[in-house]
Length: 592
Image 1: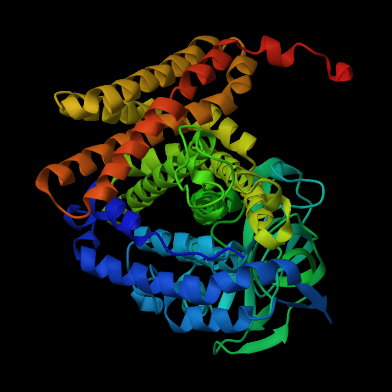
Image 2: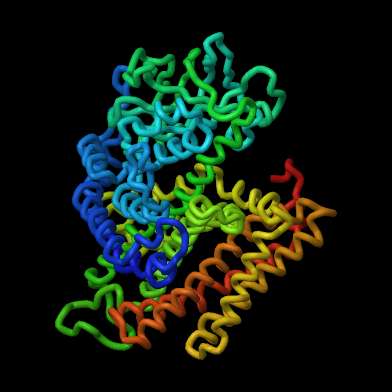
């Protein structure tokens, strides 16, 4: 079965040579020196490889079960969760006032990557709790913060978000869950929610549900929605646990993947809840949680791909099959290893280039979050808002593709469960769907994010790319292999934006029909920028004679692969966008 080793050398390269975190003026970053981050990542890696990864396949096979109204998680999950809590891993970036360690969000993402790669389904229990913590911290009253945050930081209690109902997913305006105000200031919540990840389990003594519902007087559509805190077990005034609330698990969904996480149907039968944030402004409060979740799902997309790549790489080195076309490379053996064959190299290079580029893009996004939240930088806030649908949509699309590529390296053995490759594919598939399906991410990007703040974020991005190219255009080693392809890809992105401006107003379908291709095009340009930054860092290290020369040479070769073989996809995406809506909308609904 697959094993996992945290790629700490590459993570450190991104943190200290690409992002140069310890030299960044974001509050808290000066403490992130190489030794400090290295110690954190090494310890996280030990837990991941020694505790979490061994439970990945068994958790997938065993799944969760519902017994007497209570969800029982797979064998070993309770003990592993207790170990994670005891080590403070759930509290990495929590507020110290509530028991957190106060580290930047970037470090939460870095350790989160390690835990997701080792066991995605397991990590979701704490990952969703982080989102609930963030929503209450941002929108809760002081009393609510005092009641819930310390428990959520330490994962003594876990959290969920409840949006989807059987008849409505993305269109939340169709929601039927009701909230009836009570004389004591609470609300009675009645309705059913589905697809609730970590909706119930035996890992913590309470589950704090954040539930969207409609209270009287809010009007139609999403404007009438409010957000409520609905505990599984009611909390007494002194913080102790009281009676069981009127919330129950209807069933555990039978899913394609992430079997170790309990995805529940939740029934609210007049459950007691308390308003979080302003009445009828629930979407604003929920999006604090949703935006964080979307970045986390983008991370899941490449983190699962990393684990699959590691297993495929090992198999390609060991599996003897055929001879190298240029002559035997291992004449003493009956065949050469798979990795000598060009098509296997192509497959592995595609995986390696994606995973390493995606890591850079995600960490950069996390650094923008820190800069916005810790430093109050409005430009960073605008840029990460623009990039969030790209990170979520593009990285999960490509992450799933990468896990399939990893499975392909195994041939028929990749289709057999004992190799474990099927689980990576099945687990990765959900990332393209939940927290807003990728088609919705693309629509959000084109319909809302491009025009946000008068277009300042997208123009700022273009200026950033132009500035990087101009600053380094005299660098002969980078120009042909990195800067010229980046410039061409950026021009494709600008041309697509101009097409939307010219055609979108008179024919909105023309923009929306091209939105998915635009998201992918944007993602490729972001990756091209990341690889260009990485190439500059690797080249400078080689010139100085620092560190592991083989690592830096491999980094440059991998970057050249991406720029030469993957980045030209922007031209294809642009051609599709410029074809307009007619090819997409030509058939009537009845003709399908």
